[in-house]
Length: 190
Image (tube, rainbow, N blue to C red; front, side):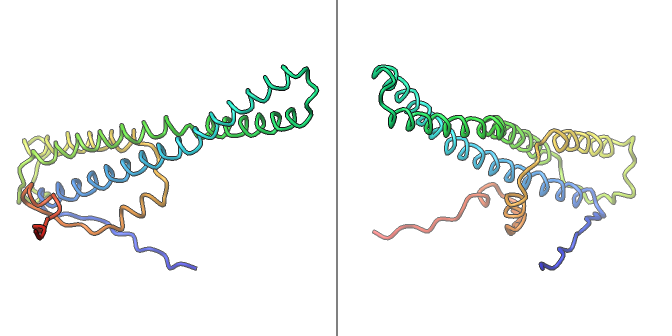
């Protein structure tokens, strides 16, 4: 049995720490939803293509049986099996709604990306959170960002646990320059 995972609670002391924590959350959620969208889209093709092929083959078999006057029993059985498989796959495809699921995750990733840009525009502050009043400019900005974060989190679809755990396990590196976001490249040898 796996050991229970320790749940960590974030308790920032400054506005800057709070914003950094929110940026981390938003950045990870964006990555999680982008991965979920890619996975759902891949599965959509994986199920959709065989469904279309089987439906086409079943239709061709049915036409062949009809043209032969219904005398070809083997062709009728093959057509029936192909039709049954196509119907099963089409039902699975409709039930899973993979294309729509991929689009919902893509939209969530876009919302998180937009929110991340909002966080990046807010200047870091060393103000103690306990000293920030709700009616002050920083207090109103924090309330706005918190409300927007809540809306995006609330609208986002549920992500498969495997994807969330995979992304959450990745190490984090906070960088201060945009050029540090790109992977470093070493010059290739001639």
